Image (cartoon, rainbow, N blue to C red; front, side):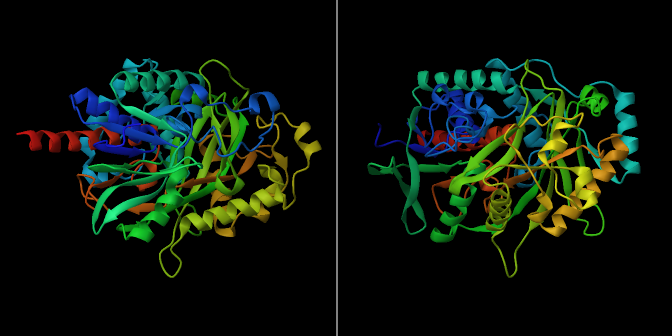
Length: 472
C-alpha cells in the first residue's frame, strides 16, 4: 500500500470512483488511493439468491458496501436531468450540472451502458399523464432515464474498477476510516483500520465520499471536528408494489414516473422514487442490524409486478436536530414488529384499520416479490404524519394511474433514505477544513448514481486545476 498518496478518497461509490477516473482522464499524475471497507466488485456476493432470505451478512451487507457502493446491486438508473438527484445545482449552477450530466453519461456509455434512453418521445401520452397529475394536485417531473439494469450495472462498474487499476489508482479494500488527522483547521490525512491493525495515512487532499451508508458516520465526524454542516432532510416512506398491468402505460411511456406532491393536511413534500417495471423488492442491511426495503430491476429477468418508493421528507432543526437518528428509530421499531424482517401490508387493510395476514396475501392477484417479508401492520410503527401523507399521496396517484390505490396494493416498510447531514461547502467543494472535501449522497448534496458521479467529475476538475496551478 502506498503510504504517501497525494489524494485519499474514502469510499468507492460513484462520487469517489468518478473523482479518480476524471483525474486520470485529464492526465493527472497525482498518487490516488481509494479506501473502501467493502470488497472489490468481483468479490461481492449476496447469499439471498440461494437462501431466499436475508442472513444478515457480517461485518457488512454486500448489497450496500463495496466497490461502486449500492449502485452495483441497485436497478442502475441514471437520471439525465439536473432537476432530479438532489441540490447540487443550487451549489454550482444548473447549467453546469446539466452539461456535466451529458459528459458523465458518455463515460457510462463507453463502459457498456445501454444506448437506449427511456422516457423520450410519446409526447401526447406524456401530456395526458401530466394532465391527470395536475388534476390530482401532483407535479410530473420530466426526466429521461438510462437503465443499466442490476446485472449489467455490475459489469459496467467492474470495467471501471479494472480501468482504474490499469491507470495506477490504488484500491484498498477491507479498511474503513475511523477518524481524520487534523492540525487546527488543516486536514493532514486519515486513520483507517481493518479490525486487526490501525494505520495513519497522510495526504494533501482528503475526499469523503461514503454514500448513504456513511451518512451517520459523517454526521458524527462533523460534530467531533467542527466541520461546518447543517441538518438536512431525511426521507421516510414505503416501497409500493402493484401488478405491472396497473402501471402499463406509465411504464411504457415514461419508464419511471417522477411525481411530487404536497398532500393535505400537512403539505409536506412527498415524492415517488426508484420505479422498477418488472422489478423485485429487495432488502438492505445497515449498521446495527437495521433492515430497510429497496427495489431493483434487471434488464432481462422480469417479474409480473412494478415497485416504486413513496417518500415523505422530514426536516428537524430546533430543538431536535438529528433526523438520521429519528429515521433509524422508525426503522428499528418496524423491524421489531417484523421480528427482524421487512413488514408488508395491503393498502386496503390499512384503510380498514387491520393488519394483513399471510393467508390473505396468498389469495391476491398480486404476489410479493420479497419472499421473506412479514405480513403485518406497518401503521403500528410509521409516524402518524408520515402515514397520513403516504395514504393521501397514494389516493392522489390513483387519479394518475387508476388502480394504484386498489385494496391489494402492497406497502413494504421501512424505506429510509439517509441524506441528512449537509456539509457546508463553496462551489469548489471546499469545506471550512483546508484539504477536506465531501462528495456524494453522504455530503447531503446529491441523491442517486448520476448526480454523485457528476459531483465526482466536478471535484476532479477542481483538483486538476489546482495541480496545474502548482506546476506553472
